[in-house]
Every structure is written in structure tokens, then in C-alpha cells.
Amino acid sequence: MVVQIGGIKYIPGMYEKKRPTGSQLADKYFRDLDQKLIEKKKKEKRPEIFPTISFSRKIGVGALEIADILAKKINYSVVDRELLMHIAQEAKLSQKTVAYFDERYPGVLNEFAKLLFGEKSFIKSDYNRHLANVVLSIAGLEPTIFVGRGTHLIIPRDRVLAVRFICSDEHRIKRLSNILKVKEKEAADKLPQIDKDQRQFFKKAFGKKDAVPYEFDMVINCDYIKNTKDAAEIVEVAFKKKFAKELS
Image (cartoon, rainbow, N blue to C red; front, top):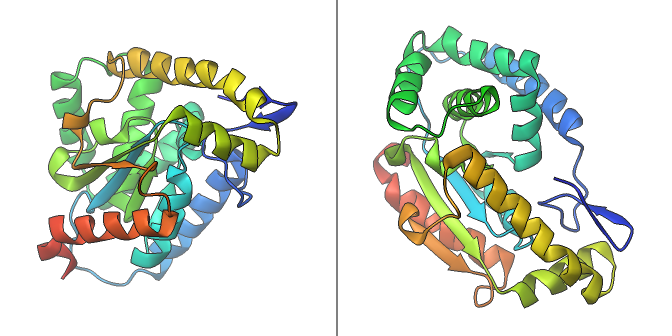
């Protein structure tokens, strides 16, 4: 989803730090993953799904910036909405991602797929199946923070710290205005369309109108937890508490 605000393209997840395009991110992701697999010498079997973090958010709240800060603190990779969309929509990339996982853990992905497809009727379209396979594969390949695309609904609940970020429209408007260097009115005019597009995705992909608080381990209101570093630290503490046995 790309929205024009004041003549400037806004892609959900944008903040002051410039990020590569989906294609560039995917290329770098697989280059880095190749190198990690080559360099890996440990023979012990690791968990099929690493302890994972999933961020769900109202678009414009700043979750990707928080994820980037947290990733550096705990040495995790960040897979955001744009990268997930690119991989899920590109059949070759999807197959490559799934193949990596199947090679390391034969049959495990099929077990997860059967569980998901059998119990979660929302996985109907080819895109949703690609998305589910890609998310599960990435979660099994390396420690990951996912941002967006309802990943907390795909990853087994006991393997993910699910965090929801919310804030007022006023907060989002000011943030978008500052990032894009446009007037607040221009940002405000586009917010309903941004929210509508997000709701449509959730309805199509998961049969849900919106995310509800009960789906998450914690909900952070960025109207009150305004500093991104503070938010990252809060999530870090919760994550280390939830997976204390595995991370110690």
C-alpha cells in the first residue's frame, strides 16, 4: 500500500531512517541468510520456531522504528510489511525461503501448515498460503521481529511475543507530517484511506475487522510511551521474561 500525501509517497513503516525497497531488502535478506547458513557450524538441532516477536500497529504509530531499535539490542533481524509482501508475492522467493526451512527441518513446515489450514479458515488464497509459509519459514530460519501483516495470527502462539502499538489519530498525523514534511491537514486527509486499506487486508486475509487486545501479550499506547527507546526497552523486558528459559 502506497499513499500519496502532499505529493510524497508514504509507505507504511516509513520514518526518518531511509530503508531500502522491498526488492532490495529481499536480495539483502537472502544474501545475509546464505552467509549465515554457510558460516553455521553448530550441529545441535535448534527449535523449529525461534522465540519470535510480532508487532501489530495502527499504521503511522512508529512500530518499525521501535523494531529497529529493539533488533540491535537483542541481535534479531527485522522483517517488515514491505519485505513480507515482496517475498509472498514473488513465487521464486517464496519457494526459496520455504526450501531453506524444509532442508533444515524436513516435514516440520507441513505439520504447521496442516495445523493452520485445518484450524484457521482464513488461509484460502494463494497469497495467504504464501504469506503463512513464508512467515513460518523465516521464523524457523533465524530470530526475527515481524512488523505488520498479522503475523501474530500465523506464528504458533507459544512461540511469539505479540505486541500491539496504538495511539491517537493526532499523534499519527503529527508523525506523518514530520516524516514527510507535509502539512498536518494533508496527512489527516489520507489517514482514513490508510486505515481503510489496513482493515480490508485484515478482513480478506483473516476474516477480521481489526486486531483485538486479547490477541496480544501487551498493548503499548504511544500517546503515553512516546520515546521509541523506552518502548523498545519495555518490549525487551517482556520478551526476555516470556522466553527466559530459552534465552538464558
